[in-house]
Length: 115
Image (cartoon, rainbow, N blue to C red; front, side, top):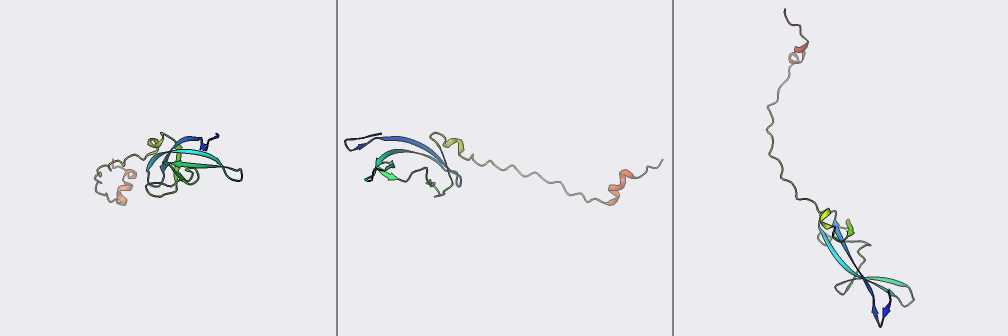
């Protein structure tokens, strides 16, 4: 990349994000500008809609719940990690009445049959 007449060439990257706390997913595109500071060191700026923002790779924050456990993927991957809608709980199955066992019931198979 080079600086041409005061303009900085920028690379455009898009990322997909999924919050592991609330399940929210979103995508964001960034203009990634490479600059040289006054001391000659290269620095990188991430720009969204003309505003400089923190690098999404350093410490992403969920835009829904402000959670910090966020998965970063290539663009187009949000739908693959979204949590499925909770399934309806099945109707309760009636429980049969409890049978109370007696010692004689347990010993019955071992008793001799009268001939």
